[in-house]
Amino acid sequence: MHLVEAQAGQLADAGVPETPLSDLSWWQADIRRLGLPEEYAVLLPGGAPHRPGKRWPAKRFAAVARRLAEFGITPVTIGGPPEAEEAATIVSACPDTHDLTGQTALMDLAPVMRGARVVVGNDTGPMHVAALVGRPCVVLFGADSDPELSRPRAHSGNPAPIVLRAADLADLPVDTVWKAASDILREPNPLPR
Image (tube, rainbow, N blue to C red; front, side):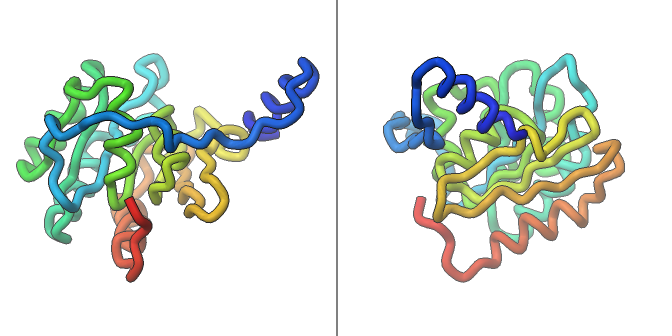
């Protein structure tokens, strides 16, 4: 059972009858200070530091960043200080990357995601935010978690996140991730932001 249904059942047992997916339209912040470009994609190379099996290699994210830049979309990395090394790897390989690692606050997360053409990242909390604000997502899962139990979900009418899975994330090819992301970018009618 997906975590959403399990928690809804617990809340129902506690007397809370209905728990729809969160509407995050209230989650606003002024993010002009971040200097985001007009057309960008968010890359989330991080994840729980104690679960390295949930992280696709930073060099693979760097390859996707280069392809995004060649496509005319600015790659944007976000994360906290623990993701600084991964972000540095991406920026080193793709200097066009707009690195916001360590520069965003929690309240910036939804507005940054909302402006992205696509979000590509590991199985981590910010991917759930991206899906809930209606952005197309490519979520990477390794053996450490089961997408049937914990994949991000979108509100009805928004695109369901694309889940890519490999027993060892290091074996997930860049071409597979890029195809999913570029298919989204080629859509003729991108979702409103």
